[in-house]
Length: 319
Image (cartoon, rainbow, N blue to C red; front, side, top):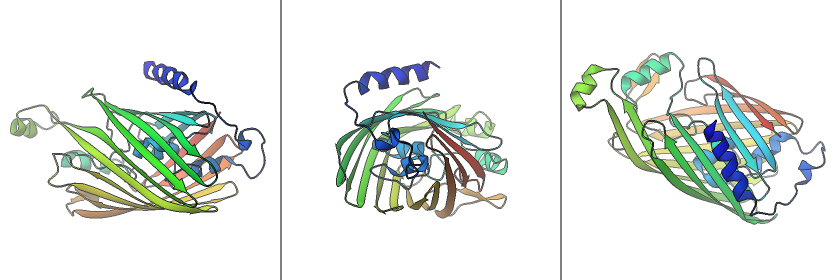
């Protein structure tokens, strides 16, 4: 609750410095302005399936739509992943309850092999114990071009360090591009396995590293296509981790469809068919469908959002 109050106070204080233009879709409820169109209004990465997905990768991708929004992604046997967003038209902010680490659109961070097997066999998401706060503003915005800037802070509940980052995104005509860089933490609990505490001589392993992201693509009418990358170099891994994302989104009336392909090069093993595979190159597929119930509610179904070959449900409520 204290974090929520802090977020609302910071955002409301900063937004007073901006004069917000009015979006016609916020005034007139007309058929060609369903809620799913808000998912594709970002300057860059319009193919991200949810606002939180885009904002975590690049804080300049926060939603600038006027009002507030609550987003939730629910999967059986797991806590709900949620975020709160608010926008004025020229700036936006998001408070995100977790992290996308070790999920389809997120970075790869270290885990013990035993933990990977246990949680994957039980369809449990990776739990990074982090929260993120992103704040962005429009520097340029018109029909022909756009330029946005954003900052982000991340905090791990075990390490308790504040990790900063920044991102920028630009659009010219039908083409867009974005990049971000931020500091991040990983933390591994060794106390579950006595042989690890004996081997390392400590109860946990912590690491700090830099994450860089890049996205670029185009939007043509109702179709958007993106290519993105996420790179990092945690000390736990033998070499740099690089993830490539290829994604597309198509909007038709009240329906938004998203598909994506993830290609990862890392030292981390993956769980397949009941056992770990230690291939450095691995791939995964994602798909989702979302439907607008008017302007204010979006419901969706996602496949493989958490890299568990699972089905999850998403909902976004705009106020």
